Image (cartoon, rainbow, N blue to C red):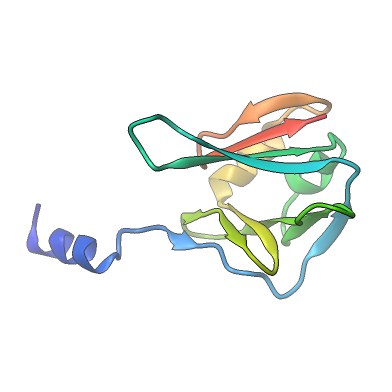
Length: 131
């Protein structure tokens, strides 16, 4: 490891950014919205965020050009935020879940089949369950 790599690691420059709250969003009201987290393995602290929602929400998510917020009367909102660089999902106490959508994640969303199903993304620690 070179000096620059060690400096980046020491000062956290290699760490993914946290997803930020967007100024404007497209709001989609859903009947089902639930979020869970799971450890990727017992040997790591990395988490998989699992979002359960209605299958029709995929229509809005798959053409994500602007941030999309899934809302439910009794659940925390989940906002999918387009980002250019790798970022990590965040649970904001005031704004709910913020899920980053890189260009690779957007491609995966667009390629998902319509209708109910369970999907795990390779570009992000995200699982999407559509009911």
